[in-house]
Image (cartoon, rainbow, N blue to C red; front, side):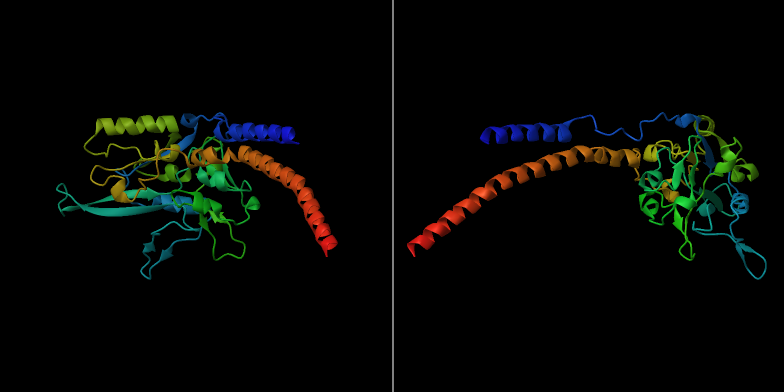
Length: 312
């Protein structure tokens, strides 16, 4: 028995070491399949070219059959101030002092929408495949699979997915980058209607080259940063901001890091099978030892009881 126990402990140690310190994960990394981010389609939002006309908001609403915007009694449209289950994109304005303006002020703009990450954490967190990352770039939604767990909302570093709280049959809602159009090689609705070129549609590689060229040609106009080039491992929606109001001042999350969130979690999750194996071996070992000792302990107790009865 001692020899068998010794061999068992040896096997336990080998399995535990292999599971915990082996550099090669026991499962295939889900991020490893061939991915060509530079050939995926995306958008370049140039805040210096935006005039706040809201054309993109109206085009998005019409394409996605979203409710009409509220209006005041005088007919003025009340454009949204935040993203929600009925608003997939919006324009935010910021007024800043300017020496070039006769009024002493100028207005600059930023566009809000889903960033369609190269490795989206919402897709990684969804347990039923309701959110899908397409090879063409868009991250789209399959409502028929959704179970309403809202894990995607917690996983997104940009707080983009929204829940239909007021619906009897609620779903997750967000910009899908007009996936039906993009899958056919057509530009998004917002890019098609932008009158100033503030929204450019193309492959990610083309958009990055265009963004770098604009910064190089007019460095005083642009903040020298392409938001989305590296953030959270890269996104298909990129942003340029003015030198007067850089991304950080416009509320862009700057502490999201440059690694994709799924890659960070996979470093731990890939070890689960090995750790599970270690636990199984350990529990089996404990069972093996205890089952061997229990009969001996019972035998000793019965012997002691018998001796005690005889003395009486």
